[in-house]
Length: 172
Image (cartoon, rainbow, N blue to C red; front, side, top):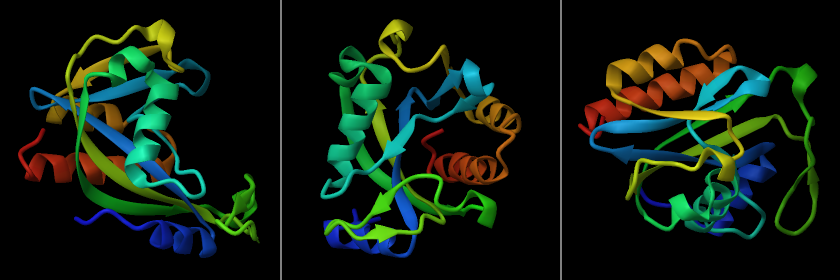
């Protein structure tokens, strides 16, 4: 799958969807899940794509912020394997400020996710350098089981879809 251009990413914003990158760290047919105690949530690390930012730049910046510089030094960004979106219920629209690259305010209706596979050079994370409380590396069955605990229906749906795609590609 081809990486989107800056213009394509901005077009997504114009439709009311905040572009997000999801970092699918893979090592030995296992994927990295992170746990955030405040939300009682296991998830794959992710973050927003800033205005004027290329997808690969966003992956590196967001993952450095979320997982720490030591872990990120040893990664190799592989490929975009999936795109998916979540549209929020109307009562959740506009919870965050969303602007196009030229500064126009847009009503935020949801998020569009770009799922990137990343070869992790190491499997040990210094949890104190991260924004999370715990982590684990999971195989296909374990990742499906963990995904079933996600209470956010949209996030659960797109994560399960991703896990199955990675399994079909024999990456997980």
